[in-house]
Amino acid sequence: MSNYETGRRLEYRIRDIFRREGYLVIRAAQSKPIDLVCMRDGRSECKTDRSWLGKDRKKELLGLAEQAGTPIILAKRKRRKVELTNLADGKMFDPKNLTTIP
Image 1 (tube, rainbow, N blue to C red):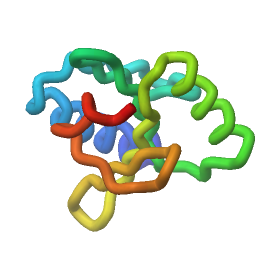
Image 2 (image 1 turned 180 degrees about the vertical axis):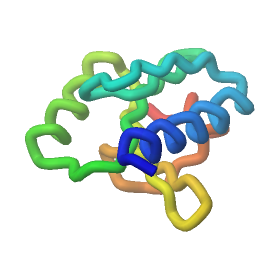
Image 3 (image 1 turned 30 degrees about the vertical axis):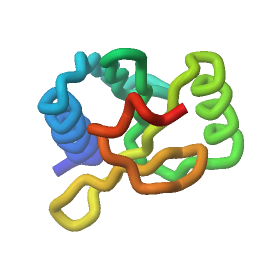
């Protein structure tokens, strides 16, 4: 399986997780720096954590989060599960709690 296919499958899994929680999810294929935008009572921007995230990209994403007033959530596969973390503080993240994050 190619890297593109692996990344796309991960994005679809993340999309499904957020949709089950009542989010509208828009996938921007081959986009940078945001892969998925998930909206419910506000907005969350998601970036899959498949590739290395350097200091410049992290700074760019945190700037977008500040402008939008919403967190950037990193997603990665961990064994057969998807692990979500908040980019700003590195803490584990549950989509059910998204609207409570400042």
